[in-house]
Length: 251
Image (cartoon, rainbow, N blue to C red; front, side, top):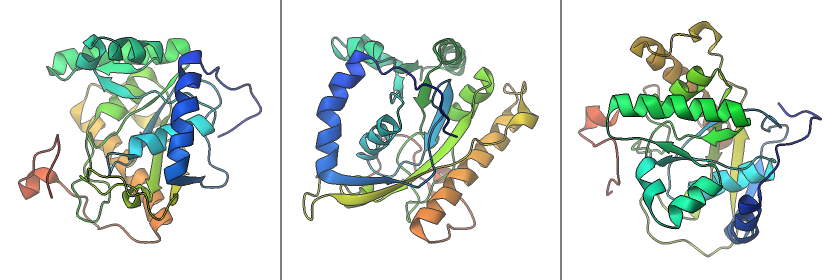
């Protein structure tokens, strides 16, 4: 996916944060991106990683930064109203997402997709919406936010998987493990998910479900390669196990 084209400029707020965050994460993790993997140097995209520990957003952010793109996440719209934090989110181009109603969420998705295309930016969206509930930490059933954004904007939907962050912070853990230092975290980035046959159909629930299924299958395949294991044949569905699908789930 990489090319010889110039990379996207990395604004000053990102460079300031990177000067602090990258060395700190480097004390905890040896991040190894799979040889040959990368991101588009320029242009909009949606990057969809697996999610199994509360420290892995830092792993994802540093990985994306090292690959030459500013790491922008979807963030709750309410956070943009918090003094100082809201200003920092806006300065770094984070993307607000509404969680109040389906119509509000649809409007935010449309605005976000237009902004991504206009500015040629990438955004990181966790398709599971929260830490996986799967007992083996495999990707669980996904939500439609990532595919809706990609289909709405007509931009690449790129799967990503990583493994090893659980050795730094356990799933639902509250403490960072400092010994032994610098745990290995391996990262794999796949080719964009083929959604060409679904273009222009992003308002249809069945289409969103199909696209989400393809995305989660692609993420799972990457993780299988990293772990050297085969995922369960059936993807974990929290509702089928009496689990809530958002928020922290105590072990």
